[in-house]
Length: 218
Length: 393
Ligand SMILES: Nc1ncnc2c1ncn2[C@@H]1O[C@H](COP(=O)(O)OP(=O)(O)OP(=O)(O)O)[C@@H](O)[C@H]1O
Ligand SMILES: [Mg+2]
Image: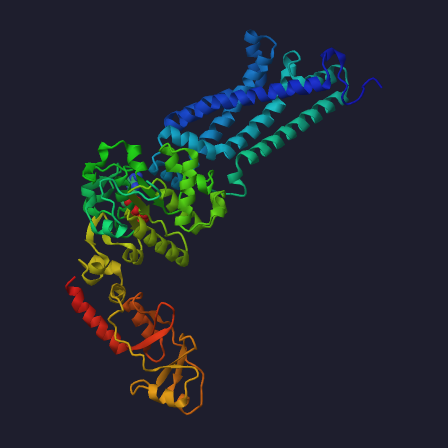
């Protein structure tokens, strides 16, 4: 059978299945991590100066509304067909999820807790970092889960700009060589990666927030 | 300095002396607070809050209690007037340093959900730069003081009951040994039994540490129980009366205060009179194995019952004197509730007499042994003489 097994990758991709998985992880996680690093200061500014929050959200939403393909094509001019061309749009997309997750998480700290912090002489910054951000961690993780899962699947669109889609490249091969098996390989692999990353995030959240266990509304 | 600190500027004296050496620590001087929307929350309020005692702000909802409390630690800034702490305008001190020098306790404790009990309590010491070890040592000490078992140290707030959270809240406020404690309805969200426990704990802590406590509540009973001084506020943030609780009950300034105190203020006023002077008679007390002869000897002309005690002298119930003297022992009548001589007030004695089916109150000593009984008439006489003496206070 010319199709080969699940883990066999057509030679034109010049990669192994494991190689594609690693690449997929990189194209997924780099944007999520960069997104988190960029979202944090933006969110803190939005928390501090409430009036910039709506416009910031508006801008993020406009970026989110740009179809990924258009974004990729636009960036090819600067970065050609490289990882960056995929990573930059995905980073921008995560912001629309992560910024509100952090800001709303920080705002959701109960009035009593906030009053207590103020009354005990926490300065504003100290209150953000020692009280509001830690309490926002579950909300931030909820945002990270959405951002991660959507990045995992969006990466495959990168195949359209010259095989920059990691496991998604299997999809173009499936079309070119009429081998639907490859499409299945890609979809299943991507789905499994998505589920595993999500499970890891849930686990990390549990470890980081022992105080939130079973605590429902607080 | 050890666990307990003495207030700066004080001689080293026992808490009792410290309490007597009253000098005003917080002065609220003609303070008005108008919120931006035009609400006048506090209107030209003037209060001198004495050092080392509990001052309660009480009043109906919305009368500006929280606003007043928060102006003391500058969470709210007054529109007019000023607040002095030991003679110094609170606005002169750096705001966070000021707040760290005042403990603050609120209704739902407001604990940090992400910190363990121990780390919650250690918050202010850590802010003040104590090292971790010392802060935790201090936290452990305070857990004991507020009656929390050491096994709670590593728990998170969600693992505690409301009453336990409130204890942590109090411990956290006390952690850096601040001279001033601000409490905003700290016990109003817990059930009456837990509340009573927390109130007693606060009084005990206060007797030990002699803090200057400003306590907000809308519960007049709580105000009367806890306050050395009580400020009654009315709608619009105006002061209706500022007086010690006994005076409030005996001489309410106006109809508003009288209404607020409720219908049974006369009865409640009795809480301030002791039972030391109450005339008791031990005559009608017999043990279970008393002979008919002894029962006859014990029977008073005006009381056809005798109080039967067990071998240790603890009251068991009333018995019909005639039946018992003739050997037909009927069932004992329950005596209701005894009052403890010296510790309980005339209110408890009166309550005991009202509860007792014979109309006589049963008095016990600290060990629970019956020491005498008192007729309602004797209690009435004690109330009259207490009133006469009370006028002089
Ligand atoms: N931030 C605010 N802005 C505008 N009005 C306020 C603000 N905070 C309080 N008020 C108003 O000021 C008045 C006093 O409020 P405050 O919270 O001091 O009352 P309170 O005596 O503590 O009441 P409660 O017993 O219900 O806690 C109320 O009429 C309230 O609506
Ligand atoms: Mg209030």
